[in-house]
Length: 101
Image 1: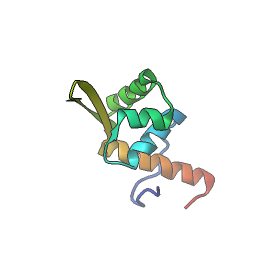
Image 2: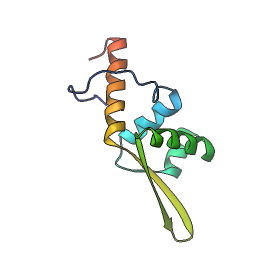
Image 3: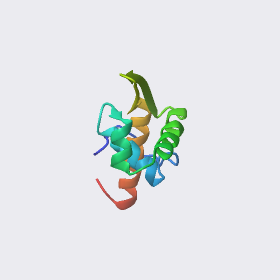
Image 4: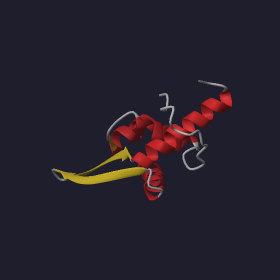
């Protein structure tokens, strides 16, 4: 995914760790993603994924929605505009480091 050219390149220490970067990149490709999908795609435990989502949510990068579906509680997540800007800036910074477009 190429960030828009108006996004300034800036390395983001919060989303740089590989687990968070993979999570944010996955969320960047969708409007909303279900917790179960993220857990499977990223091969994380419930607690590890919850911790990463909480960290990103506290920073304003991710929004979560909890709802009841029958007797089961479902959680889904999406990137906020702030999170999308941070991701795009981080990708641009990484591209600059490796000499990409």
